[in-house]
Amino acid sequence: MDVYLTTQWNELLEQFADHQKDIYFYEEYVKMYENTDAKAFCVVCEDGGSIVLMPFLRRAVNDSYDFETAYGYGGPITNCIDESWVSKAVTAIKKYLSDQKYICGFVRFHPLLENVRHCRDSFDVLFDRITVCINTEMTEEEIWTKQITSKNRNMIRKAEKNGLIYKAEYDFESLEEFTALYNATMERLHAEPFYFFDSSYYDVFIRLFRGKAFLGTIRKDNKLVCAALFMYSKKYGHYHLEGSDHTYSGLGANNLLLWKTALEFHSQNVKEFHLGGGYDSFEDNSLLKFKKAFSDNYKNFYIGKLVFNREKYAEIKDNWIKCNPEKVQQYGKLLLCYRY
Image (cartoon, rainbow, N blue to C red; front, top):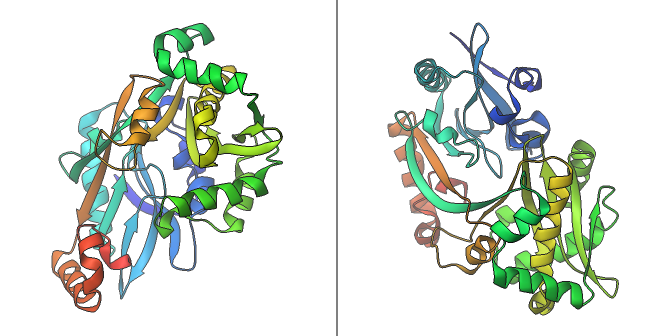
């Protein structure tokens, strides 16, 4: 087995079938989240034609490193069906990272690829939340009658009767309006800084994903009332960032947005449209309930934690606690709490 780090791994992904990879694993996506502190890398284990790879963002911690997968989903993926070999490859990757002075790492596993199965024996794996996925391989009629609930169908009809208009913008002409709407939404929800992005993020997103993404918009009397960035690979489509004017929620704007986007993905031959989950791990939160109205095809989202050097990790965390006692209640249970 050959294990190594690289900053260029797209060619390796060409050796993966469509169902074995997704847009989150490409260089373009992970590198969007690079900054002065975080650098995109991919750790690879190769043996003949068998590959396991895991992209992540690396940060320095004193004279060592930590890592986490980029916003969205990640973790190890493979083109090999031999689970015994994959298990050995994951173990080899862990040893390599430990030898390379990594202290710890945080992974957000991919619910559709179900790649958590490769890591249950070698990571500290925790269930985080349920997510929802629309089967867009079905016909339009089947999506409407077999997946969308009757109450949701009524809201979609209401939105259309109220004159709400949907458009899939592949040239992102409403991007400036969208970013203002998105930021206002995050402020209204008191979202963490993690969920805010500067203008360069959107510029890079459009440049890298033109032809693999679009801005879905809902307008009422030409006013943008709801919009979201969507992206897709050959098999999987994703609900990425969304903003909405809360004063129009009763008109069914969000319902129409996701219904029409499901049809857009169907027309692009995307097989599954992943809506993600709720605000937290509790099943009674309003966002998850809203998404469940589009499908009962539920997926499980897991996170993974790795600590390679427990002594160093404990020292760094203890120092953070001493310097930031007011943050312990909110962030203390997170693996990378010292980043806050």
